[in-house]
Length: 63
Ligand SMILES: [Zn+2]
Image (cartoon, rainbow, N blue to C red; front, side, top):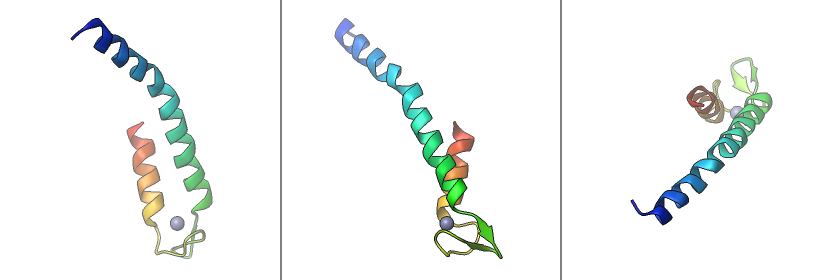
């Protein structure tokens, strides 16, 4: 690895905490909006748990 490649890699890694914070906020917003009501999502009307909630919960679990 050249020093230029190394510094490029560090620049990308420096952005990871900010990206994780954005992903966490997006996932939290989805979980706040998509709520179970009689086994149906109030935001998208899909059967509970809707696809977005499953994805958001999965993403939060991975963080
Ligand atoms: Zn939903």
